[in-house]
Image 1 (cartoon, rainbow, N blue to C red):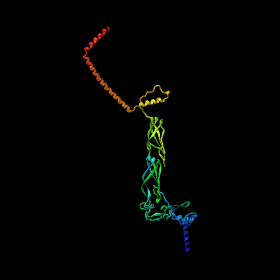
Image 2: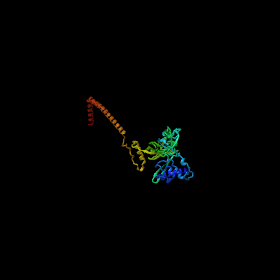
Image 3: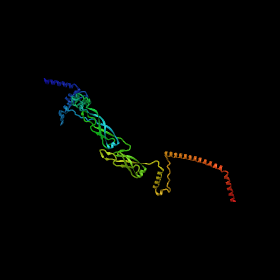
Image 4: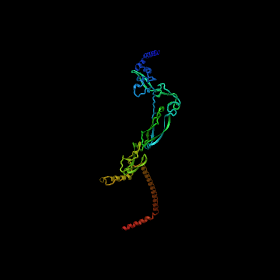
Length: 406
């Protein structure tokens, strides 16, 4: 009786398979497992037990592969651990901080693992339930009908993310995310010798991973403020110093600005424009090797005055005369001539002096006229009072002169 029932059930099942073209094609291609595993369902649908097909085709031992766990695909769940995302922070340093290093502190907002649920996202005391999409396997098979036949693809379950379980009650603090956003003060030690574009890595200060995964890293991108007096070329520093033509000829010691403060730079005699003088070990340290330092290079720029005084002109003419060869020297030395160009202040001074001299001349002329008028009046008075006596004496003297002549 039992055998008869099984025989009738087999006939009914065979009729059920042969009457459907899709089921018949699956049976012809995969056998009984192709029909039982509902691979022939709607295209793109997920199967609840996708690995029955592999067991039927390859057997419980997966086709006899050595070392393969026969229950690995049936009961195994994907225990994946995902690392958190890395973060970037941009920081600007002063020029001196990039040379000597510094310790910087800033505030950062990132994701951290929830302390209440420890990253699971589930409420404390609640239980996880089996995922209804994958049946707790963590994987699903998607099948599609193509002109070349059925195409099947195994992927991670989109509902549980490959865990095989889903949360029944969510954590109230993180709302089931397993991570919360917090603000944190980060301290970064900047080593000496960094430059623009350098990157510092702070391990473990990125976003925390999902489901309690490890956090990512924080990358600090550095920028350096520039200063006009000093430029950087690798581990060397470069500057320009301007000196007078006399210092270039005679030599001198000038004050220059360095990264460590003010220093003295010796200008040798006969320094030419464009010459480079070096202050050794006054540059930037080499990154990760602070004992090695570069040099500070100073490019010389000679300043030539546009105007000079008469005394300077005379001395330069004398110098030019002495610098010539004896045969080419002129017999008479050239006399210094005043510079044809005068400044506005000099012209104003000369104008004031001229006006003052003219005023003095006017006063002197007036005084002379006044004294002259007094003298003329006195002479007239004398002539009027002594008019009678004076001509007689004159006549007598004239007669005596005539007698002597006779």
